[in-house]
Image 1 (cartoon, rainbow over the protein chains, first blue to last red):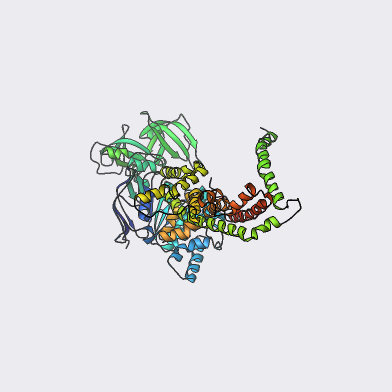
Image 2: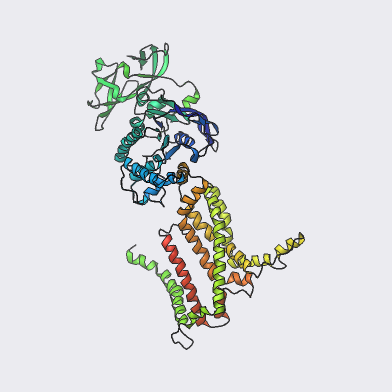
Length: 358
Length: 273
């Protein structure tokens, strides 16, 4: 039974009067891979540093396994951190780096030696014991930083954009490595990134943050398929966000055309935001489409074509398809009911302010 | 600009080096290794072994060593405090700290003379407060004070320079792995700042060892450091051969010190400026 291991309760934090986190509450269950995702400055790293103990919240409580650890220094917490720029100790060998935490805890030498061997094997760097930090590549240094953290058998591993400095290929390899590590170790990972693809690939739960607020929390599928607001829809993947009117349950009007959908409970004649992913738009013969438009843009992207279809109201629909539609051709737009995601319009100015930064 | 023309730009500096470093150094060797009649001799160098010269050398070594240790003990915590400040405020404190260095060295040392004199400023204040007056001037303590005062910035800067380069997250990582504040300093910060410490030791020890101005002004005429002995051989004794010979001995100490620095500070990380 998974119970909440970490509870952040009404956390607020400001630097020099600028609010970074505003009344943030978050529960993390044991043995899950949780990703804090958002643009730079959204407060995700600050949240991680508060959990790690490197920052004190101005208000609020940090609960770890039922204990209030808000004012506990980092060296007394049962969690370890993997830092963005590795933060290895350059005056020590690889083995000494990994042994650091265990030596501090006065573990016997044979235990430490076994642990070093085990950790190096786990991160696929057997035999690196006596190498110097400077002789390692960025990816290898990151693996050592992970090894150095996990030998201490933390209950939670905090990772602050650990793959940010690596090149694309290495980053993808490391994503699979991290999923494997998480499964082998059976501990909780809290991962910070601004890369939505990384978050979707690795996480059990994604927490989308912006301007100090949690925008949405859920599984990768939920976040991608059912974004709760325009920020999430726009930040995760590409999307068409169009104004619409919910005529009644399961029917929405967009630019004067009626689209059947599966959403209910929004009331009658209510203005809403509608999200339609570019890959969910089917281009059909003009007379078969719910809306018609003219293809105004075409780019070959490798896996698919990226097209823009402009409808008479002037909106440019982004369409991804493996079928080509030449520029200038009139086409019909058709969307399956379950591919239409309805969102409430922002209610207050506060929510409106939560815009898109990137 | 072509390569040949660029080469010529170094000309003035090369001339300067030859005129004011290479030739004088060669002359020191020439004088130090010859007698008054021009014949080769090691006597001028061996003269360091006479009791009075040996005493001056040991006194100079002792006082400069003591000053170096005091500078280190004072500079390290100061450099740590400077490191912890945010950039703007840190550099202002650094500016305040370096400000006296722009004033003339002689002037600063003479100011201490005025302060420490028997009827000087400090004793004046002490007497006014009905406290016993102090007799520091013309003792080795006054020389140490002068050395520490003048050379402290040369210890702070190289240590500060290596400390600011240490990423905050390296310190956070140590704490994250269970190290308390004391362990973080002894196991992480101190080892990582060794290049700066070695460089600082050199920059204090070498000028302190060879000084004669500080000992002249604050030590009176009775305390002779090796620097004073050499100075007197050149100015009063007019025995340039003996003065050069003793200089060569002192130079050996400096070279050892520099070799030590080169070994521990390969990347020039700890250089002060």
